[in-house]
Image (tube, rainbow, N blue to C red):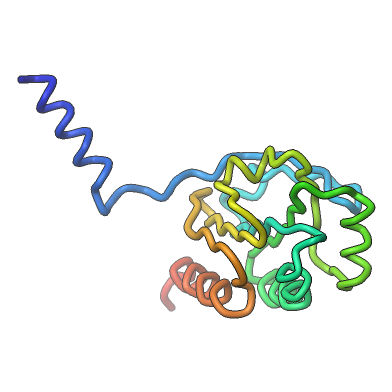
Amino acid sequence: MRAAVVALVALLSLTSPLAAAPAAPGFKVRLLDGRSLDSRDLIGKKILVLRFQASYCKPCARESAALGRLTERYRERGVEVLAIHVQDATSDVRKFMRANKVTYPVALDPRLTIGNRYGFKGTPYTVVVDRQGEIVARLHGVSVVTRLPRILDELLKKETPPA
């Protein structure tokens, strides 16, 4: 009987609407410009947008300019954008960066080490992590122009204390 009650309480806690968002896994990467980035250094300071993409992904190339504009628009508001190229070679990523005039930080994840920890299912895939380190959005497909700004604006509005 006691085991049944414990199991019921555990089940109810899993389905509760008050449950916290999943915690974002920490990771360390070397950016293509040579700098290192540790995601744990950003928790509590920045909202993190992880854009999983690839040099061979046509929608990724089409959205690249918009991702650059989004990076510039939100940088001063505490949003860090990082493109993580998955299953890609450094030379192909550098060609992609030149061809698309990439202005945002780029890292490589050739074996999907980071991607798999974030639920990667194909490019483009965008994950938004709030300042508390919780995953608040997972966007499959094209998202930079339409969906992502709404999510970021809402997050920033929640974090801004009332005047």
